[in-house]
Length: 454
Ligand code: GLN
Image (cartoon, rainbow, N blue to C red):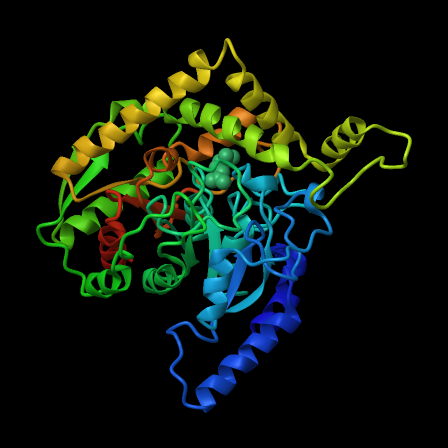
């Protein structure tokens, strides 16, 4: 049924880059046989899922939304992919994304934009717009995203779906094509909080293949989501981050957030304002750290190892083939970031740019720690605005970067954060998201709040 739904709707939505009909049906049959044979299967066995095209899939194309990986068939599965398969989850295919996960609208995909199912003239968020659009258009009940600066939560918010960035190190990065390794984190996307929790427990856990994987028990997110469903938050202390309001925030978003605060109070939570002054510098710090790490990570796309190779006709030097390939294979946003990152890391500028950004990162971590002394969770709108029109911000990178104003601090601090649907804006009728943030390894706290609120 989901494959049919994709066939009917994806001409308009363009959530998928590749639909793996055969693989999906084979996995579904396998689960069916296991169930008939009376074997014990996971809670999500047989449930279809849309996988962001940043995760390697053995034998199935993985492009990361880039021409440079066109035609590359990975010889191995990412840990997330492997865990999904082992749990009997049916992977329907690979979803569209901004090239190398750099963007907030999916317009940076080399394969054309994805459209927001709520209004096809609008963006579905990014970089994981394909995954969130697949959920919102009922093509899949579950999806996987990755969040370096907001790419799970912002698409979740603008498509009216749930998106979770777990604690950094909670889900393995092995086989996740790297953008900014100290920030990248994979996580669950779903239409309900409990669905996201079930998926979270399947993909999370220690992995020796990822040097930053946390060797600790997976936070009990399913139990917390179930507890939240009883709707009682009495005694829970919630902080409203004051930096995330005011200028640049649409009235419809602000009103939806006020309504969310009232509703959380009715559920018994104690709510007060909290100031995190360093959050004002999160965006500039991120746009030095992320490009710096990207300039280093993307050096591996050298025309020798993977995918595209341009100009290799026997007359050119290795260096010429490398630069011709990188020129043809990378899109403008990726090139912009490689340039910024190379500059920020160069000797003479390193301390002024990269070094300063790292100091801001420490201040942000300290602001979170201070806030969590007083509050169990923090909340804010997930995004300053609802989904904007396709094309509206493509000529203005600074305007595009604003979409992640509220989501980036959690990436810099490595703390978990999620977006849960918060109704429709009374300005334009488009979905709005409520962001819930928790201390590291306390992912279950935000699930409890989200499930109670939902
Ligand atoms: N929009 C942000 C960026 O362009 C975040 C991307 C992400 O989380 N992958 O870098």
